[in-house]
Length: 402
Image 1 (cartoon, helix red, strand yellow):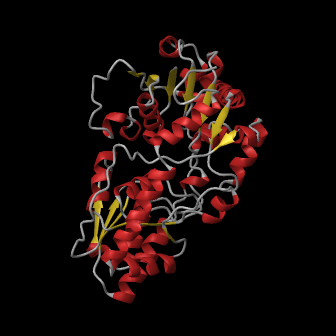
Image 2 (cartoon, helix red, strand yellow):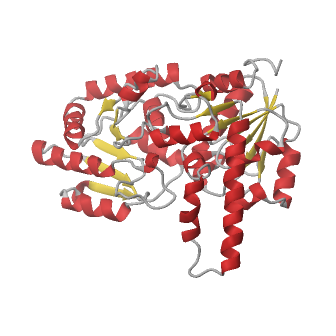
Image 3 (cartoon, one colour):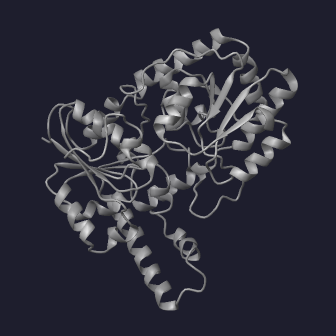
């Protein structure tokens, strides 16, 4: 079976593509972004430029390529036109009507709440340069409307739509319902790249090292274009770290990444909490570098808002590190999913309590890390995600479409 991919947010689709190849399927993968986070060579040591024949670079893909007959779009149609099935992400659903093959949509956030919602158009128009000509503004509005229509139409056409469990993002649930994506066509999974991320022995640093790879976004209202999943509760993390430092006096080595909507505000809060002298600020990095930080860390902190544990936390669990974060167990249980074995926290007090337990006990850190690794091996393998996609496409793991 030949499966075509378009869109690669955080390399999530690429993980599934590699799993499909391991299962014996033919894959055609279209790269759409120049951003390092969404390109496989920045995550995988065995992928480099020039790409092998099954990967083709169509970046920088623009929104307008989805709704206008550009040469880039024509090349994409030729590349994916012979595929038996499609897996799309980002603006990829808008392209599904161009093909006859059945498609599965892997939604990760903004591809639904920004590109699938007409109410976001005025905000995008507001981002145009000052005082645009009235005609230009009208043309952009028309193109944005066509793009949203195409995205919604593609989601209606998809045989399966992967999104987060119902109840996690109520507004997104309503949006999917308004588009016509029924509960029967929704499915969910999370992926940890366990084939490429081996367990790593804990470093047991003399001063416990705490690392957070999650974007620093926490000041409401969020900027236009951000969705509720972008709220990470970074202030809860910093206040929890500060509370631990004041109560216990145990030294920590804190490492934060200079990335997110509210880096400046987070830096100020770090100083306010008295953590400036023990906090190292790191430049934005590749996924390979993030994995190295996980290996060198004793404790990892993930999102503490109202989202759920994402790819960063799952990768940290795969490495074998205890993860403090808000895994939304109440949502997972309600959806019939298995709660994640993380150190559950959604308040500064809970962050502090988990730090007190983990920082003082290397054995407990290793126990929590091994529990996380066992969970992702069992529940989050790329092969499991690939098989779920194949089921939606009407195929099996080892055979083509019936």
